[in-house]
Image 1: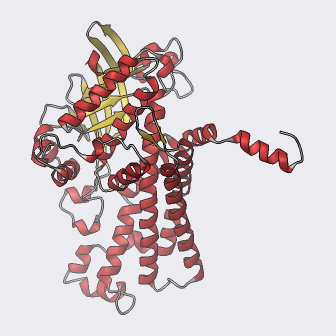
Image 2: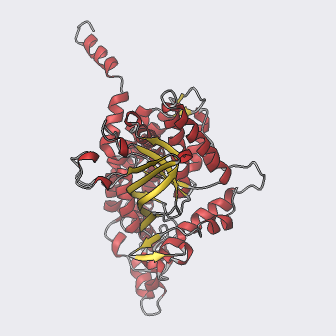
Image 3: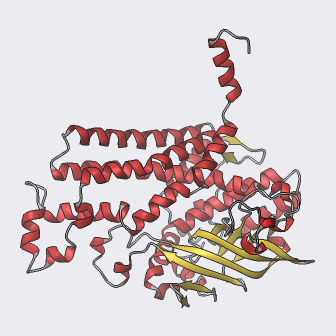
Length: 462
């Protein structure tokens, strides 16, 4: 297992990174990216064991519902780079299980790659979402064939790929980029049916970064104003593959359109399960913030406030119930690997994502405008303004200005500022968006049983 220092050193590998139009030669020297590196490095140190055969829990595939439950509980304590590593490798092994009968050579390559990742203690991301161009046109109909990542050359020892992948969280802080088709490809679209693993520093790879890291924190602004996002942020990668060579042992699909959607479906399952676990935790956090700010404002007994908080409690509880159902009804594959229920995973993720904005709205309604307009920490510390702030921001005995202001700043940072905006969109889109979750839920729902029940009520023979 690597230490945090070894992880930091491993990122100095010549990878080609950009941020705000500037080339980034040292991740740790870039204030808007350094926090992500520090968080991953801290995770390496926290879990490090010196035994030669030691491995992190993110390299363990669950083999029982209890294993699955334990891993999801641990997942909530990992940094996003490590989360994507676990979900991506689980997705690859899931795809391997589903392809084994048709393509045993690809399944063997996936399993060998999984063992290599575990042995080297690397971190990886899933590069899945293509640029897509004109959304109504298939890959072969685009005016630029590179708008979906594709094979542009086939060699005896490997393939050459070209294209771009968007929205790839933690690409810059990872070692490996696992390319997957973004959708099902049709006969005639074999070049776009490609899955493979590419090192982040491979020749021809460029990662253009955006970040929700607070700009104020990067310039030394008081971290009390950004209590969450100044310490917990990851870059988002726009990855360009400009004629990148991939050796055969790292190629997991190269033209077999029948399995082009296998990887996306496998990844969707694990991303949605992890997303549901996060939504359950976030639901509790939102309810906790709502209760705290209601008490600080003296409104905790007002009927409409109590009603909103009750609804937030129901939300958190039902998301967690769906998560538990997905775990409890998990099924074991012939390999002995445990897969969560597709139906409950997708239904729970859909409910959590669809109602998330309303829960945030309840919190903002309860908290009020000071979520955005509360004076900053510097105003409280100032000899000129501090007395005013202390006098007018307090509400009652036990609720002084600093306590109430810190609640307001935490709510703003978590739900209404840069990180809050990122989280709003991410909770909706992670795992493929609401429509994809509705489709999978409908596919796995036992409609035949529901129809039989309805026919019996109607007095008709099934």
